[in-house]
Length: 281
Image (cartoon, rainbow, N blue to C red; front, side, top):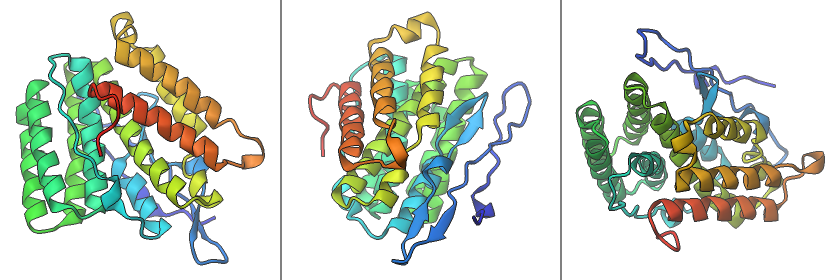
């Protein structure tokens, strides 16, 4: 099994003056007889901060680069901004918007990425994080104009890391978790959609990540009582339990109907975040 060392990263989290080493789970790849690279689903990309696994959006989608050339434009969505001052809700949506940015980058949809850059500024301002995030958002817009898609990915990653770090600094750990949850839900919804449309067992294994779901469930359970009782967090907790059951498969066989079930759970939760009965395409 060959380890791809370039997948390891360090994220500097300026809390208590310390530097946290991001332990990145490497996507170990091996060639199949068809020339398509097989993914070890047990090594789904993410990093660990305070024992909480956080997926790295750019790593997720760099792995998907290996899976052929799906029509990413079909996966791009217009994110509806919620009319609310609820910081839990805004944090969840913020995470989903960052993940949406990676979908738009995969599609090389310049207009969509520009709109997402403005959404990032909008949400960060409403969360009281405008100054710390604006420079990233402007860098995203500048990179888009140059069609520097690698640069856009980098700034999106750094945007999420900056927001989490700033929330941790302000001791808003529950909100930081919501950013991660929102991003994971949107990323997973996109991945499941692609896998369902062109199902193979190798592709499905990318989603077979029970340990990651367990970490998110633990994170939800460790939130403050007021956060746990928030209607969206409660719904996400139930959704994670359903997703975890769908991942409980025998003999490593992750069938298409389980993948689709996970997709439906994620889509329902994303729609609930933005008060949509059905997610907007």
